[in-house]
Length: 329
Image (cartoon, rainbow, N blue to C red; front, side, top):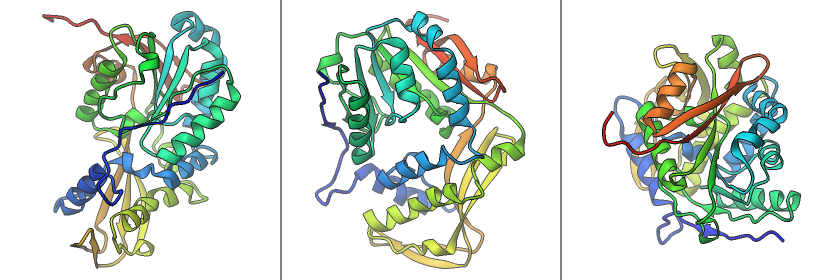
Protein backbone atom coordinates (compact mmCIF):
# COMPACT_ATOMS: atom_id res chain seq x y z
CA UNK A 1 0.00 0.00 0.00
CA UNK A 2 1.52 3.33 -0.98
CA UNK A 3 1.51 6.12 1.60
CA UNK A 4 1.49 9.79 0.69
CA UNK A 5 2.58 12.77 2.71
CA UNK A 6 2.09 16.35 1.61
CA UNK A 7 4.74 18.48 3.33
CA UNK A 8 4.85 22.18 2.46
CA UNK A 9 8.08 24.10 3.07
CA UNK A 10 7.44 27.17 0.89
CA UNK A 11 7.46 30.54 2.71
CA UNK A 12 4.25 32.37 1.75
CA UNK A 13 3.15 35.80 2.98
CA UNK A 14 -0.32 36.61 4.26
CA UNK A 15 -1.62 37.06 0.70
CA UNK A 16 -0.25 33.69 -0.44
CA UNK A 17 2.73 35.06 -2.42
CA UNK A 18 6.05 33.26 -2.23
CA UNK A 19 8.37 35.71 -0.46
CA UNK A 20 11.46 34.38 -2.21
CA UNK A 21 9.80 34.80 -5.61
CA UNK A 22 8.93 38.41 -4.89
CA UNK A 23 12.41 39.19 -3.60
CA UNK A 24 14.14 37.64 -6.62
CA UNK A 25 11.88 39.38 -9.13
CA UNK A 26 12.22 42.80 -7.53
CA UNK A 27 15.99 42.50 -7.25
CA UNK A 28 16.34 41.14 -10.78
CA UNK A 29 14.24 43.84 -12.43
CA UNK A 30 16.17 46.52 -10.53
CA UNK A 31 19.56 45.50 -11.93
CA UNK A 32 20.76 48.32 -14.18
CA UNK A 33 23.39 46.21 -15.97
CA UNK A 34 21.36 43.11 -16.85
CA UNK A 35 17.87 42.37 -15.62
CA UNK A 36 17.71 38.71 -14.61
CA UNK A 37 15.39 36.34 -12.74
CA UNK A 38 16.51 32.90 -11.48
CA UNK A 39 15.39 30.04 -13.73
CA UNK A 40 13.63 28.14 -10.94
CA UNK A 41 10.76 30.66 -11.12
CA UNK A 42 9.93 29.49 -14.64
CA UNK A 43 8.38 26.41 -13.03
CA UNK A 44 5.01 27.39 -11.67
CA UNK A 45 2.25 24.89 -12.49
CA UNK A 46 1.79 26.30 -16.00
CA UNK A 47 5.54 26.48 -16.58
CA UNK A 48 6.04 22.91 -15.37
CA UNK A 49 3.42 21.69 -17.84
CA UNK A 50 4.98 23.73 -20.63
CA UNK A 51 8.35 22.17 -19.88
CA UNK A 52 6.78 18.73 -20.15
CA UNK A 53 5.55 19.83 -23.59
CA UNK A 54 9.07 21.02 -24.50
CA UNK A 55 10.45 17.55 -23.86
CA UNK A 56 8.27 16.26 -26.71
CA UNK A 57 9.31 18.72 -29.45
CA UNK A 58 11.69 17.34 -32.13
CA UNK A 59 14.50 19.80 -31.42
CA UNK A 60 14.74 19.03 -27.70
CA UNK A 61 17.05 16.00 -27.56
CA UNK A 62 18.02 15.85 -23.81
CA UNK A 63 14.91 13.98 -22.64
CA UNK A 64 15.13 11.38 -25.41
CA UNK A 65 18.86 10.90 -24.83
CA UNK A 66 18.48 10.57 -21.06
CA UNK A 67 15.53 8.20 -21.46
CA UNK A 68 17.67 6.04 -23.75
CA UNK A 69 20.33 5.75 -21.04
CA UNK A 70 17.79 4.91 -18.35
CA UNK A 71 16.19 2.30 -20.60
CA UNK A 72 19.42 0.61 -21.68
CA UNK A 73 21.42 0.66 -18.44
CA UNK A 74 18.88 -0.54 -15.89
CA UNK A 75 20.93 -3.59 -14.88
CA UNK A 76 23.98 -1.41 -14.25
CA UNK A 77 21.96 0.95 -12.09
CA UNK A 78 20.56 -1.95 -10.08
CA UNK A 79 24.03 -3.40 -9.48
CA UNK A 80 25.67 -0.14 -8.40
CA UNK A 81 22.76 1.38 -6.47
CA UNK A 82 21.16 -1.70 -4.93
CA UNK A 83 17.59 -2.11 -3.60
CA UNK A 84 15.87 -0.40 -0.70
CA UNK A 85 17.05 3.19 -1.09
CA UNK A 86 14.72 6.16 -0.69
CA UNK A 87 14.83 7.93 -4.06
CA UNK A 88 14.76 11.68 -3.46
CA UNK A 89 14.04 13.48 -6.72
CA UNK A 90 14.93 17.15 -6.91
CA UNK A 91 12.09 18.43 -9.10
CA UNK A 92 8.80 16.64 -9.81
CA UNK A 93 9.26 13.35 -11.59
CA UNK A 94 8.87 12.94 -15.33
CA UNK A 95 6.12 10.51 -16.29
CA UNK A 96 8.73 8.75 -18.46
CA UNK A 97 12.14 8.95 -16.78
CA UNK A 98 11.34 8.41 -13.12
CA UNK A 99 9.46 5.11 -13.55
CA UNK A 100 12.38 3.71 -15.59
CA UNK A 101 14.73 4.32 -12.67
CA UNK A 102 12.29 3.07 -10.03
CA UNK A 103 11.64 -0.16 -11.92
CA UNK A 104 15.37 -0.81 -12.24
CA UNK A 105 16.46 -0.42 -8.61
CA UNK A 106 13.62 -1.61 -6.32
CA UNK A 107 13.43 1.51 -4.12
CA UNK A 108 12.24 1.57 -0.53
CA UNK A 109 10.39 4.90 -0.96
CA UNK A 110 10.06 7.84 -3.33
CA UNK A 111 10.32 11.48 -2.20
CA UNK A 112 9.70 14.07 -4.95
CA UNK A 113 10.66 17.65 -4.06
CA UNK A 114 9.25 20.57 -6.05
CA UNK A 115 8.24 24.19 -5.58
CA UNK A 116 5.19 23.88 -7.91
CA UNK A 117 2.69 22.38 -5.48
CA UNK A 118 -0.19 21.37 -7.75
CA UNK A 119 2.14 19.89 -10.34
CA UNK A 120 4.03 18.06 -7.59
CA UNK A 121 0.89 16.48 -6.18
CA UNK A 122 -0.39 15.48 -9.63
CA UNK A 123 2.96 13.87 -10.50
CA UNK A 124 3.11 12.06 -7.17
CA UNK A 125 -0.44 10.74 -7.58
CA UNK A 126 0.30 9.52 -11.10
CA UNK A 127 3.43 7.72 -9.95
CA UNK A 128 1.61 6.18 -6.97
CA UNK A 129 -0.82 4.65 -9.44
CA UNK A 130 2.04 3.06 -11.37
CA UNK A 131 3.76 1.75 -8.20
CA UNK A 132 0.94 0.85 -5.78
CA UNK A 133 3.29 -0.77 -3.26
CA UNK A 134 5.76 2.10 -3.10
CA UNK A 135 5.55 4.68 -0.27
CA UNK A 136 5.43 8.14 -1.88
CA UNK A 137 6.10 11.28 0.18
CA UNK A 138 5.82 14.52 -1.85
CA UNK A 139 7.45 17.58 -0.31
CA UNK A 140 6.60 21.06 -1.58
CA UNK A 141 9.86 22.94 -1.12
CA UNK A 142 12.54 25.02 -2.77
CA UNK A 143 15.11 22.29 -3.32
CA UNK A 144 17.91 24.81 -3.85
CA UNK A 145 18.02 24.97 -0.04
CA UNK A 146 18.55 22.21 2.49
CA UNK A 147 15.33 20.21 2.95
CA UNK A 148 14.15 18.29 5.98
CA UNK A 149 13.03 14.92 4.58
CA UNK A 150 9.97 13.06 5.92
CA UNK A 151 10.50 11.04 9.10
CA UNK A 152 9.44 7.89 7.23
CA UNK A 153 12.69 7.85 5.23
CA UNK A 154 15.09 9.09 7.91
CA UNK A 155 16.75 5.71 8.45
CA UNK A 156 16.82 4.64 4.79
CA UNK A 157 19.91 5.00 2.61
CA UNK A 158 19.23 7.70 0.01
CA UNK A 159 19.62 8.07 -3.73
CA UNK A 160 19.32 11.62 -5.00
CA UNK A 161 17.93 11.84 -8.55
CA UNK A 162 18.51 15.08 -10.45
CA UNK A 163 17.81 14.41 -14.13
CA UNK A 164 17.44 16.69 -17.13
CA UNK A 165 20.69 18.63 -16.66
CA UNK A 166 18.86 21.05 -14.36
CA UNK A 167 22.22 21.60 -12.67
CA UNK A 168 23.19 23.41 -15.87
CA UNK A 169 20.66 26.16 -15.12
CA UNK A 170 23.00 27.47 -12.42
CA UNK A 171 26.25 29.36 -12.54
CA UNK A 172 29.17 27.42 -11.05
CA UNK A 173 29.03 28.98 -7.58
CA UNK A 174 25.28 28.33 -7.23
CA UNK A 175 25.60 24.81 -8.65
CA UNK A 176 28.31 23.96 -6.11
CA UNK A 177 26.17 25.39 -3.29
CA UNK A 178 23.22 23.25 -4.45
CA UNK A 179 25.29 20.08 -4.65
CA UNK A 180 26.50 20.69 -1.10
CA UNK A 181 22.95 21.26 0.10
CA UNK A 182 21.96 17.99 -1.58
CA UNK A 183 24.85 16.30 0.20
CA UNK A 184 23.59 17.65 3.52
CA UNK A 185 19.96 16.70 2.78
CA UNK A 186 20.77 13.14 1.70
CA UNK A 187 23.42 12.21 4.29
CA UNK A 188 26.79 10.50 4.47
CA UNK A 189 25.90 7.22 2.76
CA UNK A 190 24.00 8.77 -0.12
CA UNK A 191 24.38 8.33 -3.84
CA UNK A 192 23.43 10.89 -6.49
CA UNK A 193 22.35 10.14 -10.07
CA UNK A 194 22.59 13.38 -12.00
CA UNK A 195 22.05 14.36 -15.64
CA UNK A 196 24.49 16.69 -17.40
CA UNK A 197 24.11 17.80 -21.00
CA UNK A 198 27.23 17.76 -23.16
CA UNK A 199 28.86 20.44 -25.32
CA UNK A 200 27.99 20.03 -29.00
CA UNK A 201 27.29 21.95 -32.21
CA UNK A 202 25.96 25.46 -31.60
CA UNK A 203 23.07 25.12 -34.06
CA UNK A 204 21.83 21.96 -32.33
CA UNK A 205 22.00 23.65 -28.93
CA UNK A 206 20.22 26.84 -29.95
CA UNK A 207 17.46 24.94 -31.76
CA UNK A 208 16.82 22.86 -28.63
CA UNK A 209 15.93 26.08 -26.77
CA UNK A 210 14.05 27.79 -29.61
CA UNK A 211 11.83 25.15 -31.20
CA UNK A 212 9.92 25.88 -34.40
CA UNK A 213 6.54 25.35 -32.71
CA UNK A 214 7.28 28.10 -30.17
CA UNK A 215 6.74 25.98 -27.07
CA UNK A 216 9.98 27.16 -25.45
CA UNK A 217 9.06 30.76 -26.24
CA UNK A 218 5.74 30.26 -24.47
CA UNK A 219 7.57 28.67 -21.52
CA UNK A 220 9.92 31.66 -21.27
CA UNK A 221 7.25 34.34 -21.55
CA UNK A 222 5.03 32.49 -19.07
CA UNK A 223 7.39 33.83 -16.39
CA UNK A 224 6.24 37.37 -17.20
CA UNK A 225 2.60 36.26 -17.01
CA UNK A 226 3.33 34.69 -13.62
CA UNK A 227 4.83 37.97 -12.38
CA UNK A 228 1.72 39.84 -13.54
CA UNK A 229 -0.59 37.32 -11.89
CA UNK A 230 1.18 36.79 -8.56
CA UNK A 231 2.87 40.17 -8.03
CA UNK A 232 0.15 42.48 -9.35
CA UNK A 233 2.21 43.42 -12.40
CA UNK A 234 1.25 44.95 -15.73
CA UNK A 235 4.20 43.87 -17.87
CA UNK A 236 3.14 44.04 -21.56
CA UNK A 237 4.00 40.42 -22.33
CA UNK A 238 2.94 40.77 -25.97
CA UNK A 239 5.78 43.28 -26.46
CA UNK A 240 8.49 40.78 -25.55
CA UNK A 241 10.00 38.03 -27.70
CA UNK A 242 11.92 34.93 -26.72
CA UNK A 243 15.57 34.57 -27.68
CA UNK A 244 18.03 31.68 -27.18
CA UNK A 245 21.73 32.42 -27.68
CA UNK A 246 24.91 30.37 -27.27
CA UNK A 247 27.56 31.96 -25.02
CA UNK A 248 30.80 30.19 -25.87
CA UNK A 249 32.79 31.87 -23.10
CA UNK A 250 30.62 30.26 -20.44
CA UNK A 251 29.64 27.14 -22.44
CA UNK A 252 25.94 27.80 -22.04
CA UNK A 253 22.72 28.54 -23.90
CA UNK A 254 21.05 31.65 -22.50
CA UNK A 255 17.33 32.42 -22.64
CA UNK A 256 16.26 36.06 -22.74
CA UNK A 257 12.95 37.91 -22.91
CA UNK A 258 13.69 40.82 -25.26
CA UNK A 259 11.78 44.11 -25.10
CA UNK A 260 10.47 45.07 -28.55
CA UNK A 261 9.89 48.73 -27.65
CA UNK A 262 10.64 51.25 -24.91
CA UNK A 263 8.25 50.58 -22.04
CA UNK A 264 7.32 51.27 -18.46
CA UNK A 265 5.45 48.90 -16.14
CA UNK A 266 4.81 48.24 -12.47
CA UNK A 267 5.34 45.13 -10.34
CA UNK A 268 4.27 44.91 -6.68
CA UNK A 269 3.70 48.67 -6.67
CA UNK A 270 7.14 49.61 -8.02
CA UNK A 271 7.85 51.27 -11.36
CA UNK A 272 10.30 49.81 -13.87
CA UNK A 273 11.47 50.88 -17.33
CA UNK A 274 13.08 49.00 -20.21
CA UNK A 275 14.51 50.25 -23.48
CA UNK A 276 13.90 48.59 -26.82
CA UNK A 277 16.33 45.68 -27.20
CA UNK A 278 16.97 45.39 -23.45
CA UNK A 279 16.48 41.90 -22.07
CA UNK A 280 15.47 39.98 -18.98
CA UNK A 281 17.87 37.04 -18.65
CA UNK A 282 15.70 34.12 -17.52
CA UNK A 283 17.75 30.95 -17.85
CA UNK A 284 21.20 29.50 -18.40
CA UNK A 285 21.73 25.96 -19.67
CA UNK A 286 25.39 25.18 -19.13
CA UNK A 287 26.92 22.31 -21.11
CA UNK A 288 29.71 20.08 -19.85
CA UNK A 289 32.53 17.77 -20.79
CA UNK A 290 33.95 15.02 -18.56
CA UNK A 291 36.50 17.26 -16.85
CA UNK A 292 34.13 20.12 -16.07
CA UNK A 293 31.43 17.77 -14.77
CA UNK A 294 33.93 15.95 -12.53
CA UNK A 295 35.25 19.24 -11.16
CA UNK A 296 31.74 20.52 -10.42
CA UNK A 297 30.73 17.33 -8.60
CA UNK A 298 33.92 17.17 -6.55
CA UNK A 299 33.58 20.82 -5.56
CA UNK A 300 30.04 19.98 -4.45
CA UNK A 301 31.30 17.16 -2.18
CA UNK A 302 30.40 14.27 -4.48
CA UNK A 303 32.78 11.66 -5.93
CA UNK A 304 31.88 10.44 -9.45
CA UNK A 305 31.95 6.64 -9.67
CA UNK A 306 30.34 5.87 -13.06
CA UNK A 307 29.03 7.72 -16.11
CA UNK A 308 26.94 6.77 -19.10
CA UNK A 309 26.10 8.51 -22.38
CA UNK A 310 23.50 7.85 -25.05
CA UNK A 311 24.54 6.23 -28.33
CA UNK A 312 25.12 9.60 -30.03
CA UNK A 313 27.16 11.01 -27.13
CA UNK A 314 24.80 13.93 -26.58
CA UNK A 315 23.98 13.57 -22.89
CA UNK A 316 25.48 12.01 -19.75
CA UNK A 317 24.12 10.45 -16.57
CA UNK A 318 26.62 10.34 -13.73
CA UNK A 319 26.45 8.29 -10.53
CA UNK A 320 28.34 9.83 -7.61
CA UNK A 321 28.68 9.02 -3.93
CA UNK A 322 28.77 11.44 -1.03
CA UNK A 323 32.38 12.42 -0.47
CA UNK A 324 33.90 11.68 2.90
CA UNK A 325 34.67 14.71 5.03
CA UNK A 326 38.39 15.44 5.10
CA UNK A 327 40.42 17.55 7.49
CA UNK A 328 43.11 18.24 4.86
CA UNK A 329 43.54 18.07 1.06
